[in-house]
Length: 223
Image (cartoon, rainbow, N blue to C red; front, side):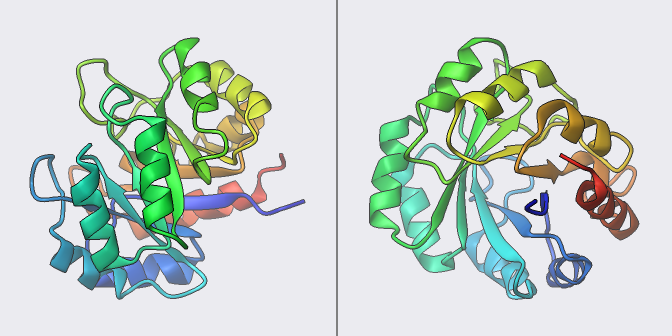
């Protein structure tokens, strides 16, 4: 049985990246942008954070913008292992992801999918054969981006997506050390992601004890 992949966002310093690598987290996520969305790091700052990532942990660069020319340019500069597309589905389409995949050869494409109802299944299936990972996350209809809400969604929809797509699924949305085992049993994903529930209380800095407990609980959960 393959190990459960673990992914942690939003890592914002060299020291955090290094420490989270040492815990053994598989994907270390950095939010990249020019300030259009809160907490985005400019390319130069993101590169400094990424320099702290120790293999075999992989650098995942999250872009919330839907401007694919800008995404391509920034990704060329950063050369992340994983290019994570987080714009709302009506702003960035499968064809856009396919274009980026063709231009950025060697990078894995992760696409966030909003879990909002039956329509989410169709959105997820539209990325089969394009994305290398699907990240299933909570979403507010008014948001131009997917995720970072700190709340769970309907795991039964996520479970159906896991069963119907060929692409490996990473489950996100309000996951932390205390609910990760239940989430894995309910959804049976290939991996799990945490942002809000592994932050320090009242901060966007990472709580390394929470990260460690999240990672260890995910690894221990039987799928």
